[in-house]
Amino acid sequence: MDDLNFCPACGKDLPPGTAYCPMCGARLNDIGAPRSQAPADVKKNGERVKIAAVLLIITAVISITSGIYLYLHAADFVDSLVNMFPAGTFSAEMINSLEGTLQVSGLLSVIGGMVAVIAAALALKRRMYTFTIILCIVATLLGNFIIGLIALYLIHKAKPAFTD
Image (cartoon, rainbow, N blue to C red; front, top):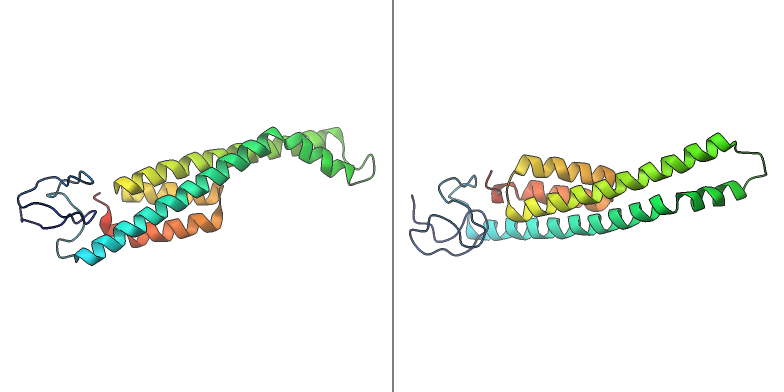
């Protein structure tokens, strides 16, 4: 094994002869990042991953909070909508269907938030790049679209920081 003075995965300074990074735990023999990657690029990728993880956590908080609120208050939203129109505009079946749709939307938002948390954890560990990207896409589609897209872009740009 080459004696590296920094971890190609996270940029941490390493003592000579180190087999595992003390910061991220990456096995230096199996690192997917090119050994010629400059320390500045490693640190930049590490910062991208951290920012992406923060954005994913923000997405998770927004998605979970709004999803729970929507699920719990779907009937109130439907009542407000129904009261804006003349009586008899909506059938009972339509009202129930709309309320059920809002509840399902709330549950999907909560699921998107949970997926965002998992994607953030994997990104911070810099493991399973492809799976992290897939989870990030799911979280983006089910949660906050714009924030999720930014996180997805940052994770994609930081691909060399991932170990597998």
